[in-house]
Structures are given as structure tokens and as C-alpha cells.
Amino acid sequence: PMAARIFEPKRLQELVNRHHEGEKLDPAVEMLLLEMAEEFVDEVARRSCELAKHRKSKKLDIQDVQLHLEKAWNMKIPGFSGSSVRRRHHLLDSTKRRLNLAQKRMAEKKKKKQQREDGKAMGPPSKRSRGSDKSTWSASSSR
Image (tube, rainbow, N blue to C red; front, side):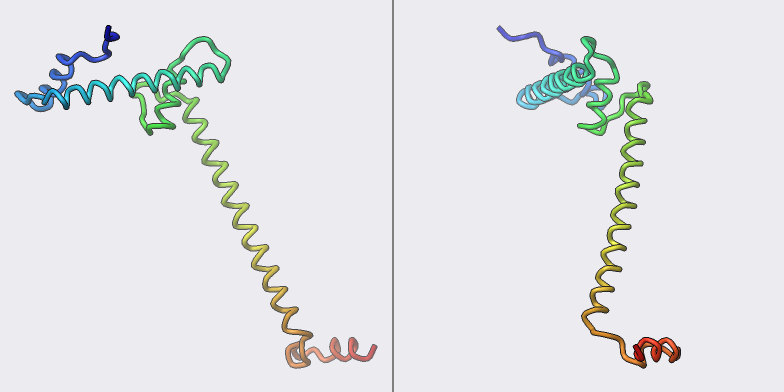
């Protein structure tokens, strides 16, 4: 025996008629759409329950569904744009900024280190590269 369907073929035809009046669905397309809808709802319910369980709740809340839809499908639930998911996005944005800043600093340090190593590879500086300050050069050379 077949389990109860989330969508009935008649309801699917009504949805099609709402957008394209008089249009008929091919039976194969109808079955494909019905299967896809059921699989989607099943996956959302399963993943949302996992999120509820992860937060140690025995109750599935809208925030669980909302979080899964936003993260996995980039979908927003109209009327339920709660702060919990938005706050998490904010934290992710601030984390990304910190990571970018850290990467820039590391790149700058690496560049400075490379410049120092390139300078050492060229050997000691000559008198001309020291500039016009002869006292500095002569004091270090007389020792």
C-alpha cells in the first residue's frame, strides 16, 4: 500500500492552472514533480529534526526548519525571518572579516620577511648604498 501523499495530483494541477490556465501536465511530469516535492519535504523534515536534536530539544521549532532551508537551499521563510539565523549570519560575516584581516597581516609579514632575506642574499651593503652619512660607516669600519 502506498503512503499518503503530501500533494495530490489534483492539487498539483491546480497549481499549474493558477499560472497557466488550461495547461495539462504530462502524467510522467506529474509523477516526477510529486516525487520531488515529497523527497524535498522529507529531507527538510529529517534535517530539521536533526537540528532540533542537536540543540537537545524534543520539539521541532520553526527555527530548525528555517536554519536548514537557509543553509542548505538559500531559502527564506516569509514572515519568519527570525533573529537566530540572522545573528548567526552576522557572526559568520564578522568571522570572515577577522580571517581576511589575519590573512592580510600574514601576507604582509611574509612579504617583509622575503624582502629581508633578499637583502641578506645580496651581501653586505657597499659604502654608496649606506647613503651620505659617512660617520656611521667610518665608525663601524674602524673597529
